[in-house]
Image 1 (cartoon, helix red, strand yellow):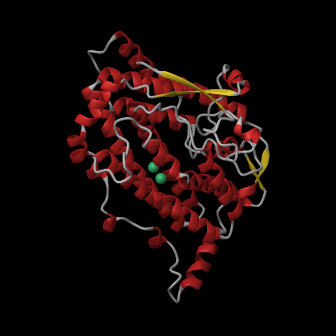
Image 2: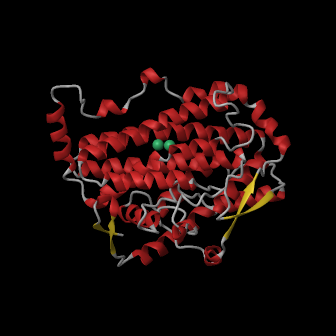
Image 3: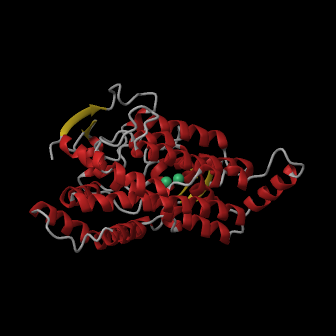
Length: 390
Ligand SMILES: [Fe+2]
Ligand SMILES: [Fe+2]
């Protein structure tokens, strides 16, 4: 693969200085997931380095044709995973209706139920909501990809239609969680709103290099990760008695599942068309690690906010190293990676790497769990500086 390496200084106009205070701006994400794994040793060096390498346009131009030739397939096989708007749930279906006479009664009930949610679960819910609210970043990320981007903002290619409709479906997630948490009266909305603004201003760097092979592997993984975390959150808040909120998280989880199926199907097709390039891309993304979309979150106070949020998720079992390993195993099985033949030497090496990856992740997870023992309690501005165990 030909790769262009761009060295971008943090103070360059491409990384606007208004987005984050200096300490946070120069912070390299130390944890690639729910704080489940310790940092690799060479990352210390990265942390000291004020330059960050960003690779762009790593897909050879001729491969764009693959995505052009897949348009008919995408029309028939991808767009069927979108739900017509008229059949979609909307946030209002789960919220008190401010136009109804019973609004105040419904609001009182909502607040009563939400009283039972422990602070650490509130931190998880807020972090999940903030992650969903940074949707402009994710639509931007999809539109960085060569060969599938929405060229006009209203392009009629199936790739562009998918991206817009996916965004529109996703938009309901942050909207609903935001309104519910606002009405619960348990969280500091101004601090949350600031975090969302910081996060959208900071963007994300998932290292997909404008390359749809890498990008669709990322989205397959990421949608499954959000499916897992929303599903487990649903179970946990159910245990704490908020059935309505459990229903909300479960409903969002089922959207994520549908999206995961669609993205994984694209990669499955890519394995069929170009097994070697897809295998190399899979291993490449796994080596770079799947960073969570909200890694750059900041509330104006806590320079390690994402790490702290992730540590709480890890401790509560919302999203852990084992979940990460499970997702790797799931994708390896779904794409029938183990039995794939006819690969180049590099392709075979990549295949071996991804097939042997999950036990290594589980071992690192154990180490991280050990390190997390006796973790301190810290205040979270999202819940008025009440302290939560990491
Ligand atoms: Fe979502
Ligand atoms: Fe999603």
